[in-house]
Length: 274
Ligand code: ADP
Ligand code: MG
Image: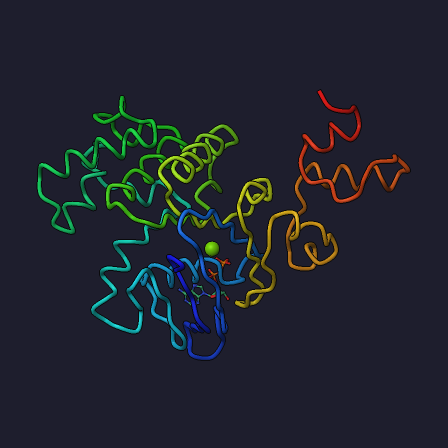
């Protein structure tokens, strides 16, 4: 049984243009799904539909046994699907890290003693134990985003959605956050839906979906998405860096295989295995 399922979902903000249109998709437990698509293609709207911040105009979202067309289920869906947004500064509210992480569980009435345990678990999961008493203001972008993730983890979600959560970070911060998310996915079995503009981030997903004008334009493994270079570009995607270099080399007559995606593949093709 899929952990999350969208069936013919449409949603419009203005009741004229659909931000998401007739969208159907399902995610299995433990999957890592990347969501790509140009600006305005409906990615953030989809994230908010997935965690019942928005309710579909048509169709339905099901999370486990809870469905968005039953009002009584909305709270259960929100509890199971946690979203981390782009700007860490808008997500941290308390002046001390551990208070910030406690905020969510307190709000949903988790008992005191258990809140302590959840803070422990969440800080450990993002590797920020030693910063529990720090002020979020003094942390780097990557560290702040790891605390934002910890805040969501303290609500023990089954699905973690990252809505361009690395977009405002420098390369080191981005790497930090990705490592944490990868580990949560691999070791704790957290289902991850990562919305991103960085194609390199999409390469380690189990599956990629591409939105275009609110519609599901393409779905497949990363190599399937990027093997049709022309279509990928048409959908507003930038090819991974190594792929662009490989294509450029081929254009200039260098004899390497087509469809290269990663820097490792490119290096191997040029120099043989290590
Ligand atoms: P993405 O995250 O892929 O950039 P969004 O889901 O934010 O796309 O936006 C999809 C469409 O919905 C766009 O046309 C956008 O202008 C519109 N939209 C997004 N948020 C709102 C809002 N709060 N009110 C009205 N229209 C919105
Ligand atoms: Mg967005």
